[in-house]
Image (cartoon, rainbow, N blue to C red; front, side):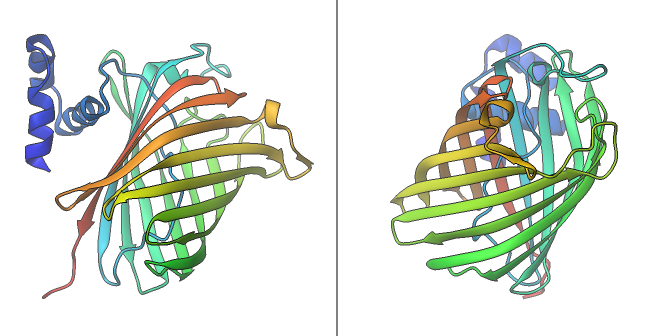
Length: 281
């Protein structure tokens, strides 16, 4: 991975290279990821854009996913007083995970961070999760549930403390992955607590090679539990996504567009995944 990052950084111009030399390790990594994605300016998106599938750490082992999301173009008007628009910050979120056994996995998004256009790096909160998968074979049907809660800075969410329950389901064959999540999001505190909001996420991918898959991911808000079908008043987005492996690292990279009430026009997302082994040989 170090060689891959260094190669990405080395492809920049002289001015960009000089600026990169002044960045911290996290910021340098973030810019390197964006170089892989093929872009330069710094903007932002949600801390995690991902459809949960049958991925699961081996028992007694863990993993680190680095989520780097960016909005090159979108509505620059903040959605509420004191908020920041997505188009002036980069979201970088390390997600740590540890598998207790074949069914339960613990996770932490720690810390939630942003980097704005002026190079200001901020800590924005945390989230904790627990995932249960009843079945997660490499081939066949899988199902499970994920619960998470956490606190996010007021600049990013008008309701600081939030919950989410995520239903996980799908099927994987030798050539296809078809997966979905049904999410129920609701605020624990804040000035705009509403009934749970429902989002249905989907991933359909075709395996070009055993370790490379090209597909489509969609994230579809459909309204609150007391009012289904409010598509025009909910946020949706769709992505063309590539999943592949580089050495020990798994890479998910996608380019997408928001619609409905989503103010983000062009969205870039990247997930770098590394195994963390804790067991003795």
